[in-house]
Amino acid sequence: MEKVEELMVYSWTLEEYLEAIKYEIFYKSVAGVMEWSLDAEEGSEETRSRDVESKYQIVGGSCRHMFECTTDQAIQDLCAAMNSVSNYETLFEMNAGDRSKRFVNRLHGKYRIGNQVYWTFISRFVARELAEKLGESFVRKIEQLPDMTRNPSLRGILFEMLFFARIGREPGLEVTLRSENQAESEKHDEWQRCGVIPLEGREVEKALKQGAARLCLKPLKWNQGGCDAVIVDSNDKLVRFIQATIAETHDLKLRFMYDCLQSLGIEQGGTWKVEVVFVVPKENLYKFRVNHVEDDFILTPYGWTRDAQVVAMNSGLQG
Image (cartoon, helix red, strand yellow):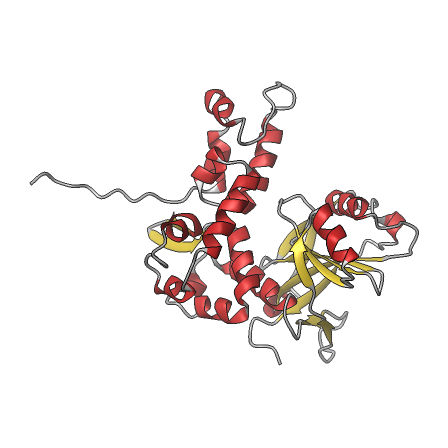
């Protein structure tokens, strides 16, 4: 009998994608599905990197979806895979999940970090969609799996999943406010549930025509809105940009938020209130700091006072 050597194929990391596109021959071979121009100026390394980072939020570690499909095709493919799953409970067994090939091959990711191998969702897009679809109980079951909370590739994703699992369902999301004096009694705010839809002009216009008063818009690109979610409250004339993070520091890129306000047709001059809010774990409520702010005066016409708010989302059960 011939010797058989097992080869483990791991999901691609963002760093590996960025390294691959530095090679001109490879870059030209995938320019079509990446929707890149072969013009020297438009095909700069900065442009390539930005587009890869944007698409990475959707396709994650799937190099096939990154380099063989357009972004729209990848979204359709991943959504079809999620819809094809007949029993999500089998996902928690940490082996193959549902026996549908579409589910196994397209929704799971596996990464090697040091000497450890970790399972995770193939991308942030898939994780958020499943959390929104299945709710907080789905997130809890994943947290209860052996070693899940110590999985570095899942830790931040689980926090984002919890946000989307709550904001789209009753009773909404309770957050703890950060006060100037840490010794003060805790104050809380209730964020009412919102209809969660993609941050796309046609989707937003359609929802508003149907009378939706509160929307939670989820960007599909890393630079779309400059955040993880945008809450638009038509009744209170409020736009709230939200970044959910487990990090203790974060940069703030206001240009993307300005572009988002423009695309949504939000009027300048103080008619609408604009907020920028970081949602962090409770243990980071008083540790969190904004590192660097880009274009720090660009939101002034909208009445923003250059003061990002920090609130905590309790990872435990609400209520």
